[in-house]
Image 1 (cartoon, one colour):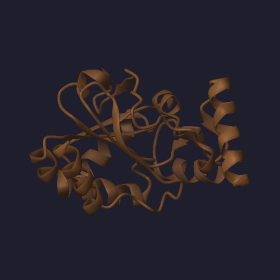
Image 2 (cartoon, helix red, strand yellow):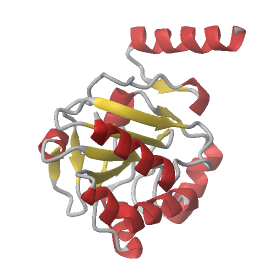
Image 3 (cartoon, one colour):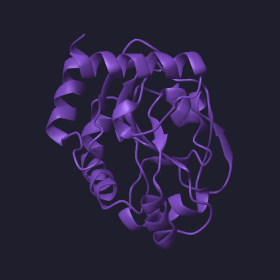
Length: 199
């Protein structure tokens, strides 16, 4: 109970201060089901600015926030999404993946994994902060990222997150786990999509 109250206090403090960058993954304060994603500007693999809502309004979306192509757990998750893409599309959804990497670093992810869904960069982490899933990367992690990537290394990371949104950007479901090694399974995702289709 004490830990829950502490987390709630931290969350309220972040909202009041409008900081939205937690000290650690366990302290994030994400948007909740029923709230809406902001119309942030993201960058595609060609270094073009894209308004997020222009993509979301096309169809309901499985939105995935991942740490980066340098993260093996993220790569496994993205590959699994690619394998499930036909089923997800058949269910009436599109897939969008976003990371705080530079645009130079999202293209190898697209090419290596042979994924067909859209991948965007949020290089300054503004969207991550607005969604409330950003936390400060420690020096060890930043050093590791610098070895594995090129370009600017982000000072913040997202807690890996899966959100299901309607065409207005309203959150219908979310899966957020501070343990970056644990990701939402394909079976759970498909079960949630199936349940939402019945509503």
